[in-house]
Structure formats: C-alpha cells, structure tokens
Length: 153
Image (cartoon, rainbow, N blue to C red; front, top):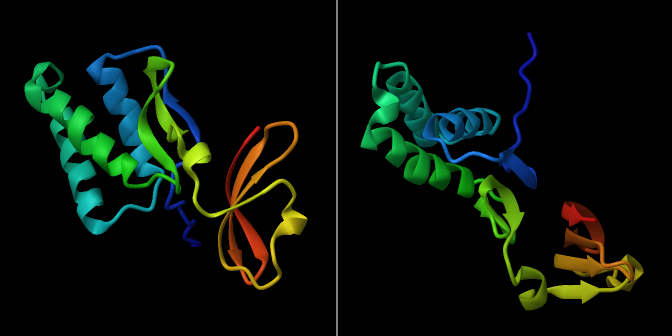
C-alpha cells in the first residue's frame, strides 16, 4: 500500500463560492483542510470539529460559527503560500479560498525581474517575475535554480 503525499500549502483559487451559510462553509473548509498535510494539533482540531458536526443542532450553535470563522480559517490560512492568505476574495465576500495578498506584488522586496534570464546564477532567495503581459510568477531560487511557488496569469 502506497501512501500518497498531501500538499503542505493550499492552491490559489476558490474553495467555496456564492454562500455564507455555516453548513456550506464548514463542509468546504473541512474538505480543504483534509486535503492538506496538517500538523498533529491541526489534525486533532479538524477531527474534533468533524465529530461535533455530526451532533444534532450543532450547525445552529455559536460553536459551529466559531469553528468555521476562527479555527478552520486559521488552520487554512496557516497553509497559505508565500505572499498569500486564506479568506474571502477582496472583490467577493462570499468567495473563500487562497489569494495573493493585496499589495504583495507592489511591495515585494526580493529580486524582481522582467525575464528569468536576469536571475544571477549564484542568487538564492525569492524572485518575482512579472512579464510584459502582466503575468506574475513567484519563484524560490537556490543558486540561480528556480522553483515555482505560484503564478497568476
């Protein structure tokens, strides 16, 4: 039996759209959390919420709302890529997922290039590539070798 590896970080994009209902968000957030490589503490919190969610009347309690708006949001946000966050989309409060933080691209203080050939062969650190079409890719460089963290087209 092979064990499949779960990602440590969430992928950019929506997890739940067009709803603010606690039961919908709870289900979507639990699915997202269970798709990630969680810490032991996070896994324990998610399992407790899953157990509680099976109890009659749980969804109408303040505990359910707290579990969605605090516990699960915090867990998912902790699994955000560099320069990103988990929460509602800046343009749509009912669209939850992982997004690039507002201002991150403008305030980026690492190496910013128009072309990846501009990255020095011995450079190590974060590299933000913004091409002439406005596409943005964040890389981590290790002695000039680039590994993509995320990209926006």
